[in-house]
Length: 373
Image (cartoon, rainbow, N blue to C red):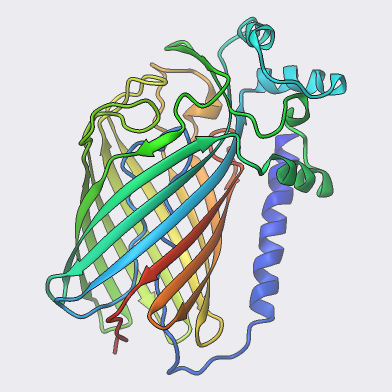
């Protein structure tokens, strides 16, 4: 059931990308810019609070100048164990209902470990970049997050119906509710509404070094960052622990096409709630392609692979232990030194450890952008 849905999802994404490229107009070799990877972050509830190194940008500004970047990420998560899915599918014919104590007890009575995560969240990131020298820049990022039932459930169910995907048990529960149930060997937690409506999460500071490699077409970058729990541990807002990360990027930019590879490793100090997570090194790989569609508009396609933050000490469920795979398709448009971004992120392969779908809206003010050459 899951294999068919994943196959159809990948096919739809591939057809959409090919259609965009097939209808692309030609652009002058001297017009526009390439901006690098979309600056999306991991929005999954399974590890969202850890430091996640953002993909390196490819924007060049003058020494002594600055840029401001704002990103709004919004995601819908419906993730559940196989036993919970079977239970909910068996009750779809009874109509929708709010999850209550009876359903919670039924889930806890299911064999083995089980979980259900049904929520939407919005994450707002504000980043200030400053260029110290030709090759060295620094940044600081402030974050805020909001949790709730959201509004995307009906849209996602309609999409599943239109393309013949499984319902995954969604029609058994009320739309746009928040439910978080963890019945794992390390913890038992249950929330029928968001335990917090949101607030400020941990800020991040970082420094980045970039330099040409084999001419101006190639560039290599090195970056380090730290996430600081200034306000201490708060449920679904901060782990209360300090994380460190390093990242290396390789960028190849032509007149119209850009190819990018990002490899990162984060020391994640772990968490105690809502489910215990051990301290560990979390590697991430991002590979992306950028196409200059018109003088002012670019298309991006990139894939994200990262290790799960769960271990066998927390759970033996393969859904939570497996790697996370996500693909993002996006558009960028530059006007008057303001770069607008829109992206759509879809989960792939292991669909029960990442959001069903996520959206990114970004605005960056870059007053002193300059071309390479």
